[in-house]
Length: 446
Ligand SMILES: Cc1cc2nc3c(=O)[nH]c(=O)nc-3n(C[C@H](O)[C@H](O)[C@H](O)COP(=O)(O)O)c2cc1C
Image (cartoon, rainbow, N blue to C red; front, top):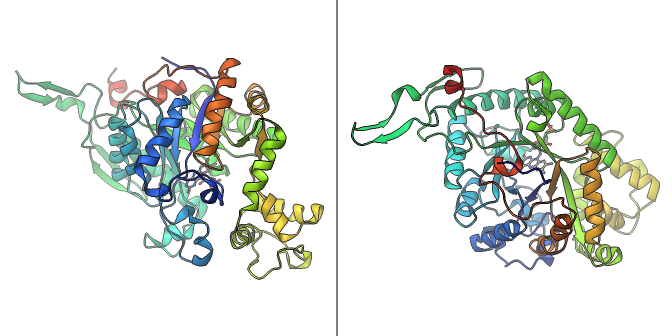
């Protein structure tokens, strides 16, 4: 059973993705570690018939500028994602449950086992976001001073994925027979050990849990580097894209899908979900006012830190109501070239003060403020012009913005025949229209 409507996922941080979300959210004060609250969020997303409830992750609290992080709690207090999704698997029935886990900080055996378990617990709704991680706070929790170089991280990620996917094929689908008459639990010929000796991992053994309901969890990726795109073209089934304009997204979409045939894959075997932040109003002006008010809640310390990190300039003592002097801006960027260039052109072209700058800077994203009709027009255009197969919704404030979206945007999408009216499949794969992979050993025997 497949579902050909656009795919919708939701990226969930407890009170929302916006740095000031916790000040405006209707969530309880302890939202980030409140399982009852998360259950309500997941139920809300499921009421909206969404495909994927997704938890991002970096395995690290921040250890510097703590006075600033007291005003920006995002990274400091949160559930471990696979544990959280395991709990949510019991209170949801249809929605996919996706989590980030880093190939730089796990061992393949642990990860294969955890995600296979999550897929069983949820009856086939697990998804793994394969990331290589991009911050040194995490590296320092795992015996490193800083992250290994980008190409080494991807080399490890490829081998990691290879080992994990072999482990997921330890058991053929019908290996466990539970035959009491013959006193036989499983067919030994349908158990296959992994014997892997590589540059990063040595693994000899088998997974001690039967094959996952989806064969293996849905493989998600979000890298946009050359290494990232090539790895995704070979292995990913869902990709989160994050280009802010239609043209860039179309280019990314064509580029990524164009790389798939070289790996023997058809473009339909991957769903590209474009990042989308929306604020819904009964008029465009009302939605914009709502968003402006939220932006005005960003504490100056937080505004300075987030902007300064991307501009690679310590803005701690800069006056808020004056422009940043151009001669102090670094000549080139070391970290995020695109974000850096965006800020520099805002400084040059718009002559904004520091306060105005951090209040309008969106880190490569664009927030769509509008009526449900305007938002759906935008979504339709992106789907119809091959910029995306669906969207990854990053709501600024949770649950508030998701409540509006489910109440007003989902019905408009349904009215236009763009979104399902009920779940058609039981697994995440079925709802996304992705095939269930065959077990390699069973296939070889055939
Ligand atoms: C929607 C979305 C969610 C992401 N979630 C995570 C995450 O949870 N953890 C993480 O380390 N990186 C996350 N990323 C970052 C990417 O996975 C990737 O690591 C990053 O873009 C750097 O990869 P690249 O160098 O190949 O571009 C996310 C990106 C997007 C667009």
